[in-house]
Amino acid sequence: MDLSPRTLRFRLLAAGLLPRTRLARAACYLLGLDLLLFALQRFFGLFKLSWGTALAGWVGILSVLAIILISVVAYRWLKARLLWRLRNRLIVTYMFIGVIPVILLVAMTFITLYLFAGQFANFVVTSELNSRLRSLQSANAAIANELVARLEHGQPAVAESLEGLKRNDPAWASRQVCAWKGGTPLAVCDAAAPGKTPFSIPSFLTPTFGAIVWDREELYLRAGTEIGSGPQKLSVVSSEALDRTLLERLANDLGEITLYSSRTVAEAPTPAATLTPRISLDSQSKEDTTLRPGKNGTPPAKAREELRLAFTAGALPPPGNTFDREIAFATPISVVDWATGAQKKTGALLRVLTRPSVLYTRLFATLGDFATGVEYSLLFAAVIFAIIEMFALFIGTRLTRTVTGAVAQL
Image 1 (tube, rainbow, N blue to C red):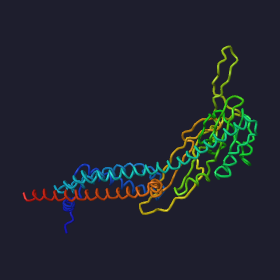
Image 2: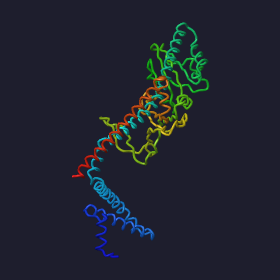
Image 3: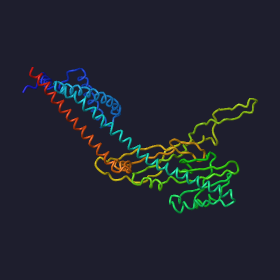
Image 4: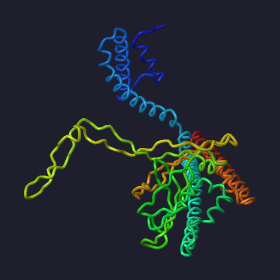
């Protein structure tokens, strides 16, 4: 058997394994050089020589270049092997014209449905929170009007409607209600929150206030009502903690709800000089903004806001079928600082983990038989589209054979 270099070269050339183009040869040279440097790096590493570490960068660069060139060569080889016949070219053309757009359309549909499902899951939770907040506002306004009527008739500041709400609605057992007249707290504030720290009345309170607020490192649903002005102004505020118990009720038959709240974190001061203004005693009274050390020679600590995990409520329901995958989506919640009145667009973050079957049940719960009709209609349309696509692919293949058969006969 002849194994001379010339014979071996001819055999590799006949098998298509010998690089013919400049790009293919460059790829082979880079790959060989990369393997050589990699072997040297391993060899030097065995003896713990510093040269092995120095070769690591060159090995990484050559590996990236070799992968890029080999990918281009492989694409050209596959293109030449696949498209050398007219029939293959026509089939590839039909695939790009008919099949690829369908695949992209299906992928876009699934991505859209995933985003819609995530947004809908968060909408369910936020709408429930807004509904409770509106209910809290309505009850708070009723309590404020009752207190105004009693105070005008010289009666004690006692809200009988509040006692009725506590007896009939379990949610009011954990809510706090405080009232102030001219800035002075009334007895309602003491009776409404036994064993709990009363909250203060803010300066930014409006006649109809309702929002999620941040107070004492916790989140609350709060509604406020103001009636009158001056010393006779009556202010009533109702508060409900946005805690695990509340989210457990909202997460019932929905999934897992995780709440991230914004916390103020103090950063450690750096041992550098701080900019301390100093008022001079000259005639112009200008500020001296020279760099001077802070108190005790250390600069003040900086505060920054960050989101931290508050708690998780609920549990992810089991899947209904193989395609009932998990859906996770997060949405920011606007929060009002109870101390300053500043509004934070990302004061809290709400993340919902659920499944499409749960959202489908929620979406079509009130539609009844109409939801079943929509489901079967969509399934029927998908089957019809699949049949049309398969029929079109079959017709395209038959036409391809007809054209290539005529060319073959010629």
